[in-house]
Length: 403
Ligand code: AMP
Image 1 (cartoon, helix red, strand yellow):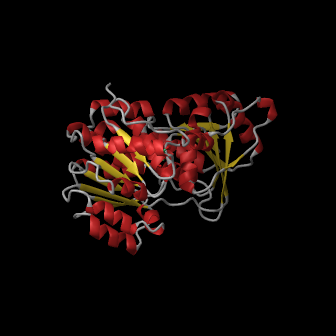
Image 2: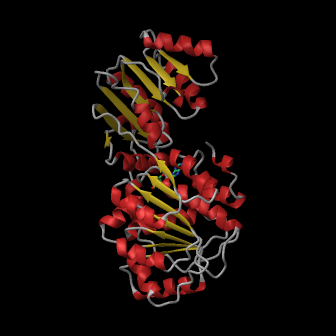
Image 3: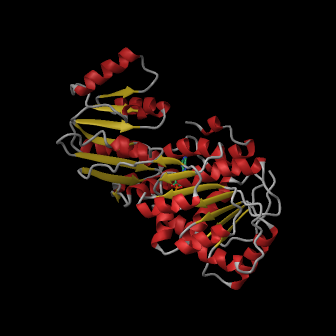
């Protein structure tokens, strides 16, 4: 589903486009319409699924239509300062072309930040992304403008309970207007989460994004390269990794057609598969592939779901799939039934962040292979590193931005 289908505010759409999101992730597809309709939500979703944008986008949209000036409009409670910083950064990007203001409020920093936070909380700010303890420190001083609060988000609620924040959460809630929209996100749905939800949520809709993990027997590997190195590298891989049947995935059909031409020119026995082919052509290609007459197929994600061919033993992602779900579906084409399989992903510089998000979803990094020296120098894999570097940024006073 494309973001244009949600009917979001044009300034918000502009921010989404500049962030580079095109297609909504499964959790976004499920949750955004429900939040726009004003429902309370309890959602089971892990980091890496796009859950942050799933709650930020509809709240930003609704605040652009109706925000209480001089008030805190939305509180996002999170377990750690790192998560507060990460969400605040995401929020800055997604509200860049809008008039939405925000501040991250978290413990452990110096007195100057406390004064900045006090200033924002007493003058009003659309979003406050905060850890419970620090917010309570401000609440105890009596200046936080909460009478106009409309939204409460609990993110990583299971972690907050594990860290002993239950009473702090309930204390914060006792300061809030009772008429508000509540959204609770948690990686698990343990009984203690359901019990917390019963205390806080009103007639919630439940959303469950079950992410399947890839089978252990798939050997996953990735190569970090510059985009022009992908073509020579894939040829080397196809000549050195033994396979019976292999699929190469590209996200766009233009890329599928181009790569098919390039690899045919390099004398590989290969065919292409994408939605521009007639049904009869697709069936013919599939038949020739299944029988091994053409052992190599380059395809769009049309092939990544539900196609049952048992002896595919190599999957190559020529570009990084859009999200973790797509990655798992693509590599799941190999190592079906009893056979083992290899899944290789080529990561260009601008795809590094996307791949880091997939690794976050997998819960572990994918092994990076050595690119043959004759292909020249390669970029460093800095996606994780950048995320850490950014977290040292300070947040100044909230600012109203006009497009
Ligand atoms: P989260 O699960 O919220 O931590 O998001 C994981 C990563 O996915 C972050 O780097 C987001 O910026 C990115 N992301 C979220 N939604 C999308 C989308 N629709 N398209 C591409 N990337 C996304």
